[in-house]
Picture 1 (cartoon, rainbow, N blue to C red):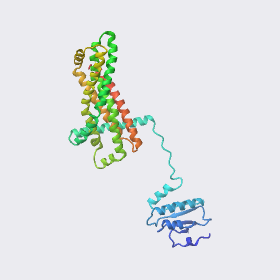
Picture 2 (cartoon, one colour):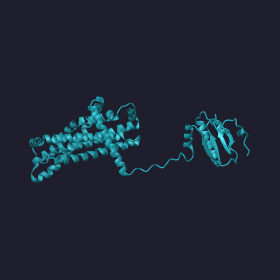
Picture 3 (cartoon, one colour):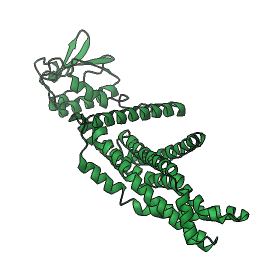
Picture 4 (tube, rainbow, N blue to C red):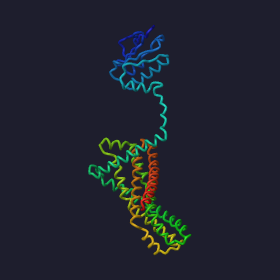
Length: 367
């Protein structure tokens, strides 16, 4: 076999040598320039060659690029390339660049719907446990919630949410008065219309409508804020600093909604009762004094505490749904949108489920 003079000299760097009937390229002190300048073995070099890097003291991206190009030329000749003794970093770079090795693997099949649902339930219960643990630590004095964070969330969830809550409850009060009056008018019992509107708003609808409004406005905001922080690795940074994200991010939002819920419920119920008086007086002929008297008679302590309990429960569910989706969101812009949508849907489902369950329980208990 004829060997080029430049390659037969064993003292040159990046030179080919015939060792045990196998052409070997030694990379001792080789650079990208010397590898690129190295000629190929003779045409009858066999079916494979070896590139040896055990004596390589260091490497750079130029050497990696030259080796990759050399491999392509050798493979065009039909030669199989064997690598030996390469530094770990250089070997990883070449693996990424080798033909066939960098081909993306087919994405794994998504888990079945049942598996995803069970995984989501496990995450939700685990999150509830973390929140309860954080609450216990805060009540026990071992965790600290900054008052400024709570005040900021109070401003977001209270005054900025009150107008739309008042509007929604007022419209529901008008609809309730029309629907109830149409049925009571058939039996000449329009005088009980005030009690129907008052009990319906205080016990059920004020809290339900407040929860629905908060889920779309506040729950979505919580999810978007926390999901954006997760995408920006801010939550990971908190964990690295030893700060519990549940205490630092979730508790202020949860406490703010629980503190603001009674005020929103009270204003919402009053708006619904006052708006229900308009059709009761103008359409069904109920006297204003009679409407006021019937409303006060129907408003008992039982209805008040049940309505307050339900409203605060709905507010807590809104906060938990938003924070849960935000903390477990993906790390992309698309994941932020998905977390926001999931938070609203999850909050609405939880609220309706809680409303049904509490109504059945309280009715069965005689309240």
